[in-house]
Length: 167
Image 1 (cartoon, rainbow, N blue to C red):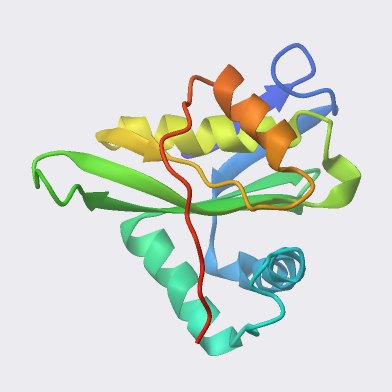
Image 2: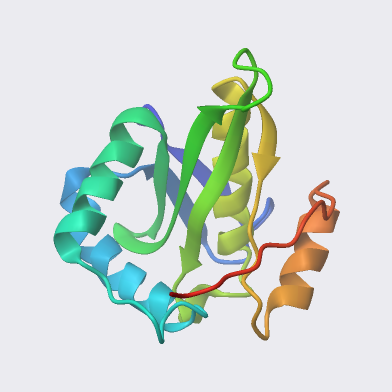
């Protein structure tokens, strides 16, 4: 198995035949830009913002180079992605924290366990890189309760809520 690739099968986290999770590559950027559009359209920010492809491409490159950016694929087709920033805590530069920026799975694969495998692998890789505090986000939409339950089952606890004001 290639370095950076993990496979999840039906006996594990996924009910789909197999999901490979690997580091994202520049060649994935076109599909990631497409997925970002779908993500933004489901976000509360959609009515206030648009995606600038050049900005997003730069962000994806920074995540690959310095943080975390992974993709889930089945039979070579990318079906999901997750990205996170790793940074020292503001109160102790000797301790790393990670913040999930996005976690997206194509609709046809939701409920299959592929998204959970993607979240598990993102968390595992963060821990492997020395992250002590890991933050996951749940958008305030119709999935917030089920996502919160998933996070709790995965060992997370609710610690704060974020509020947005658009100028």
